[in-house]
Amino acid sequence: MALKKRKYDAEYIKYGFVAIEKNGVEVPQCVAVKVSYEIAMLIAKNKKPHTIGENLVKPCIVNAVKILLGDDMAKQFKNISLSDSTVKR
Image 1 (tube, helix red, strand yellow):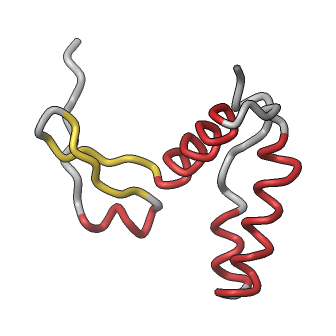
Image 2 (tube, rainbow, N blue to C red):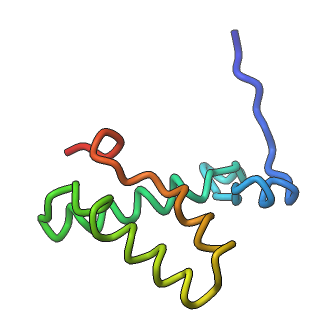
C-alpha cells in the first residue's frame, strides 16, 4: 500500500508545523520535534548527560520565554519533549 503524500499548507503553522525541504519537496515538520532534536544534539555534542535537557535546559527556556514573551508563549515551549525516555543515547 503506497503512502499518501501530503503537501505543506500555510494553515499547518497554527497546529505547530513548519515546512522543511526534503529531496526538493516541501514537507511539514512539527516545530516541537525539531527543537527537541536540536537541543538533544547540542547536549550530546557537549558530552553532557541527556537528562540535563528535562532537568535544566527546558525549565530555563520556559522561564526565559515567560519573562520575555508572557505565559501564553511559555505554555507552547512546555511541549518540547526532552524527557530521558524520549531522548536516548
